[in-house]
Amino acid sequence: DIQMTQSPSSLSASVGDRVTITCRASQSISSYVNWYQKKPGQAPKLLIYAASSLQSGVPSRFSGSGSGTDFTLTISSLQPADSATYYCQQTYTTTRTFGQGTKVEIK
Amino acid sequence: QVQLVESGGGLVKPGGSLRLSCAASGFTFSDYYMSWIRQAPGKGLEWVSFISSSGSTIFDADSVQGRFTISRDNAKNSLYLQMNSLRVDDTAVYYCARGIAAADYDAFDIWGQGTMVTVSS
Image (cartoon, rainbow over all chains, first blue to last red; front, side, top):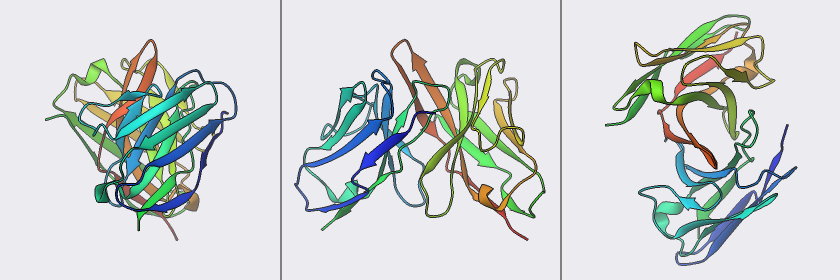
């Protein structure tokens, strides 16, 4: 199975900061990476698909990049509503594995 | 509006069985593949099972293979997860999700609110 490793596991940043989360795949997965936002008690929400495509309705401060094994989710200007856990996911293989998550807190 | 609503969760003893359901509305259910994903308390998301739009293709995570069975009834706009031989580590919130796929992407764009399954003696 392909392993997805996220870093950092958690971070704390101030409103307006630029935040970057990375995800590394254990083997090349082209651009078959998605990013989800998960808040406690809520369903996960798709933010980015195909590594860099912004899902409809998602604020433009979210962006994704990368291909092969290394991927990045960037929040250009952190907002209070962005406090959540973020997960990368690969859909290159039939077992659609997730990363372990990155918890983002607002200072 | 486009919606997925899970039901069927609850408390069950180790070795027991449970059947989860996911009711879809607001879209043509038979056009989409579906999956179950779970989140154990304090843990991350874990993909569980996949079923194609027609139901002819199924994939399961190693952790549930041989114990869980995904199925769907396109006439009833419903997805199911039959869970047998339940273990304590199957305790989690179970989500159903709609899959969107094309030549160069594949993602879960709509999720239900989840149903809690607790396996405990």
